[in-house]
Image (cartoon, rainbow, N blue to C red; front, side, top):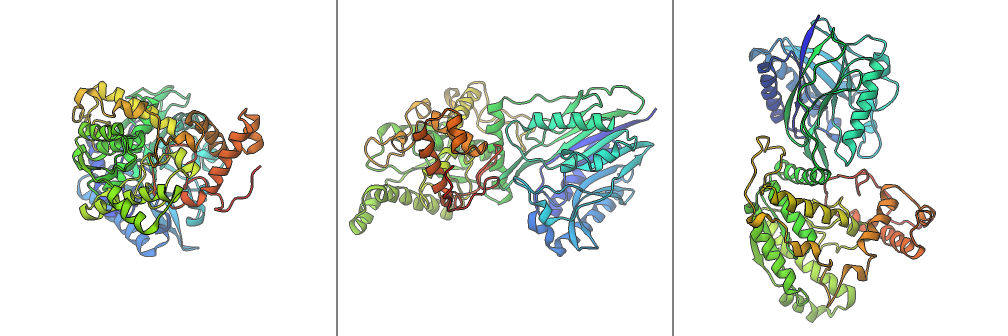
Length: 565
């Protein structure tokens, strides 16, 4: 009978930061050894960060990464961890083609003890690996203390055939996989179902270690887990946090012992947390300590401000009210209340004097005059960003981006767009959730997230309310002309979002949308708006991908699109 303890090191890495990533690997290797682990496995491309994209093509970077892997092996031994088997991801080189490889290395006894190269290189959705890497072509079975460990990297388990199918004939005791699987709604269950199939295929438990943290417009949710050969969930790490999970393998047992299984968050909490983590890590990895944004009193800017407060603390949020002659008293009050709730800096910069100066020279009318207001606000936001060293965040949602209902160089300015992948109806849902969470004691910065693994409840919210209820309940309006409502230019959001979900996320064409039961006028209006706005979307800031199909990362249509069927 053989017992082997595995540690699942779910960590947040930074692309290109070889020193910082190596230090974190060392830290978690020590924690794993302290917990009695014999093997510790890290996420995909741990040492280099993931995805490294074209950085992999730089020979000097590949050499530096390989030198750092050797240093890490030596340092582990020097620290008394030479007996530990440490599986980390990095970039290697196919010397025949001089192309990079997505590689797993196992560090042991002061050296790179074993290696494995990823076979399947995804070239869909957010991935571009086929262009960058050379594919591996051999399976690897590690023998550690008599335990046969089959290994694979991420996409290798998503494709039928290949290394996992070949491992089914190798009589392995466990399948160990490292992953860099980005977050999207509903993917937790998809990964679990896949792991159940693969465990059954190889007739052994399967270990799935996933990356956590934000990297540009991707969010990695962690949620590492282990399933038994019969599909029983044996261990699950929490989502959105760094974590060291443990799994004890008994090679003689028919069924393995169940360990710690973290609860899955509420679906609204999950999406909200993903957006916050995306913003938090984007700030950290680009060295921003605070944000600035326009606070209109509307729901979009209110939700973005709430997310920013949860990401970096209310004191690091600079909200700017920029009322015009058309701004309602209620909107101005809601903006002030929101800023007070989250403890943000709050300035009022009226735009009417500047608008009058522009109009004195330009004499604009209609949409041009409306957009001028938004562009004046954009100038003010960027002035705060430049003068105070803050990250300007855009407040547009997916419904607006889809239909072009935003102003280039106006409300579209900024370096990051936290709700870019949320339809308007989802914005309302998440705002209601955040208020429910506030009432339940989740204060500002109280999310269970990278950096708050100890579960600090955060700064209490006055009255248990974060987002003013009136911001949630009132009819949305850009307030660029008297009595304006969004529904003047767009279908009601309840209907619009259903059409958008079908057209964008499910790729339904005109005939499909009519068959779905949508009326012809609405279908034609929405399709026309979406297709004509592609040029605008291409200029919009990055934002966290949280749905199956996000603008920019997943949906790439021609700017000029005359196809209407």
